[in-house]
Image (cartoon, rainbow, N blue to C red; front, side):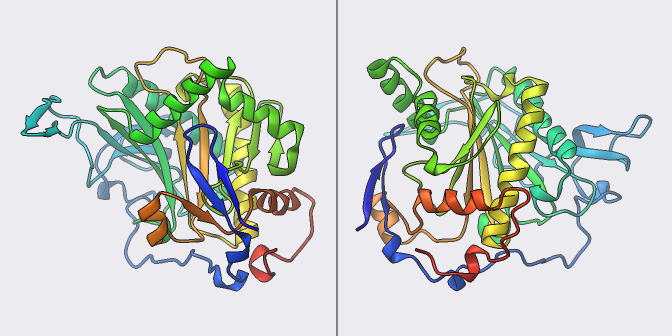
Length: 346
């Protein structure tokens, strides 16, 4: 029988309906190279991008030239721009403001890689540290309220260029989805006296059917009310509300977790398109006892149709318990050759 599950943070209901699962062969791999022209993100093509904002590069190399490991540049087609003031204004009943903000591209390798799992763990660690440092830098701009780091991999996930990169958009308002998380977390905290994410960690560890992996500092699990098949959250075990406050040791451990989790998802789903987002507290917030930064990874193996758009319910054909079991099977040293795409669900 289908299961209706309520997200304990934002109160969103999800339908877990394994009886509606497509046959695995209907989930098609989304990685198909579309490179037909010089890639602007490859080393040697620095002239094809806007000037770099910051870069991790070899000593003695010149800005906007070869010799870099990671480059951060302004998006060539930005959603928001740093120049100008906010200037909030009314248009009758409508409220508006100037599109002031930041839109940066974090080019994660000089090599033409297409997914996070292709990075060495040390390389991924440096990428995650750049996320932290750019958020910390933009936090100092008093016009900006929030910074969202996100990654689109594959055309189905919204990527226009296949070369491995992430983006950071800083906005003058806190996004509604983050406001909902913070409001739901605060309500839980006032009712239960504890952080909802910490409570989730405790319950998942106590009954680990949805746990993918754990390390001393992190847990990766399929959320109880997963919106999408194989939706996976990576959450620090220690309570912390701001990603940009993470220390070097924590970033290093996170790199190992992210490499494993993304690699397992790619193995089980045969290179799917995916998105991930880093949800952290707003720039002007002090340390929040009720909110916990985390990373949400969302493979794009199903679409959103009329019912989802009209009702706000997501229908997920793969239970989080089943997804976690399949991802746990892909632990290092496991030699099962069969993948999720070559066998029936359920």
